[in-house]
Image 1: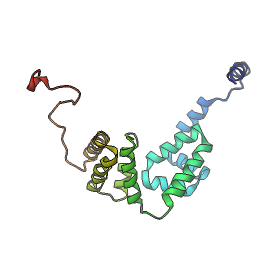
Image 2 (image 1 turned 180 degrees about the vertical axis):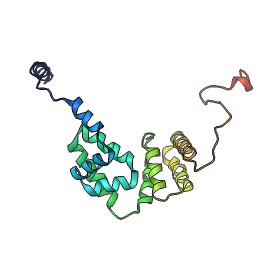
Image 3 (image 1 turned 120 degrees about the vertical axis):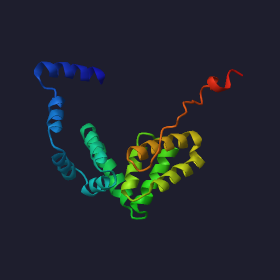
Image 4 (image 1 turned 60 degrees about the vertical axis):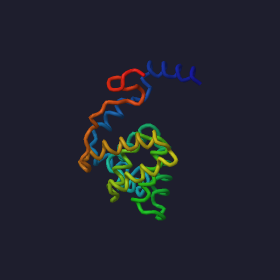
Length: 186
């Protein structure tokens, strides 16, 4: 199959038949966010898009845009299952659901999505204390290393958002190295 693709690509270059992905990207880049949002609302499951926007704002739209450019068919399945079906089951309110997802992120050691879901929880009315408690409770199954990582992400985000007055620790210690400056060699 690879040989066929290479042969087609070379022939396509000579005949100018290859799709111009750069032009498609440029036309999307020139588009304003409101126009692109409307395109996504028309193209995909409207309720799924609106649910994602309610929970995650522009972060969600950016993700849909990125997925849409890569694989529209998969994007449709993902949106329908997660944002139309699972997030709209009405068994839990949005705040509770997002707090559960925060705990799942800590247990799964998912540092990329954790800040997004913390922001979503705040948007849904969760307090910093509630979010912190979920992270602390997650350590029961996840262990201390994952909870520490989650708590550091939480601290940084709360500080950046101005929700908690937190300072950087004055200590430089690293658990991987002995503190030779104060304890000396053993």
